[in-house]
Length: 330
Image 1 (cartoon, one colour):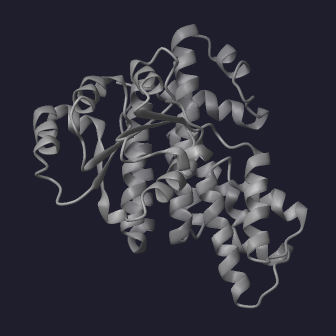
Image 2 (cartoon, one colour; image 1 turned 90 degrees about the vertical axis):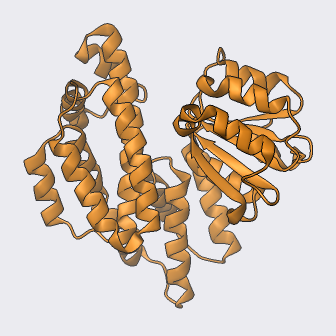
């Protein structure tokens, strides 16, 4: 059964015990999870790989209910067609105390996992498409209106553009604005720029670009010239992940056509002329296998940063320096 992201009220957890999220809008996925699952303590997170490596134990523990004293939600990250047989096995059983939510990246129409969830009425399939500027602007206006915070349309556009299409970053920025306004301070151009680090946006993008291209000297210079704080580290990790996913698509294209200029010129969305040279360096430095590994590591480092926010600067700095020095494409 296919539902849209705003139709989660149609989910009946007594019947729909397995749910598939797919698509690149991680911010909207997390928002939907928070609505669907009120109690975070009921969530058990798994990577698909760790389940595949211990397939029999995973199935046995669920069916014997040895993992759970009461209803629990299992969230399986980076799910793919590889986990299809396990899901089919569990679907045939009575999962009266367990709800499984699979979180996948983009799944093509020919995906067997997607097909299973789309066709079975007891299963739920929800696609999460990227937010465009219009959707993010609507979200921003609604957030500010509900909290009676006054900001000019031009500054709202700045905030939306700052977030690179990621609603998680947008919500983080809006929450900072809300906290600032509660102190009785008016939001103007000057304090807004400082508040959401618009002046540092370029340095973050430049830092990530040079890390992907392994320009270690430039990376060290950027790190020395900027005073990042703990909140910036989450933004760096999320922005890094966005750029890595875009680079993966370019790398796959280059692997097929073997023509780097054609890869750059045919990119969608188009690559800005100032970024073409460093993007070429990134493609030449990294192959799809390496980038997929990097994306996995970025998800892990983001989780570590959120768990150890006071040590986040050391975590992200070490990660970036290690990435700039590691041997890749071998």
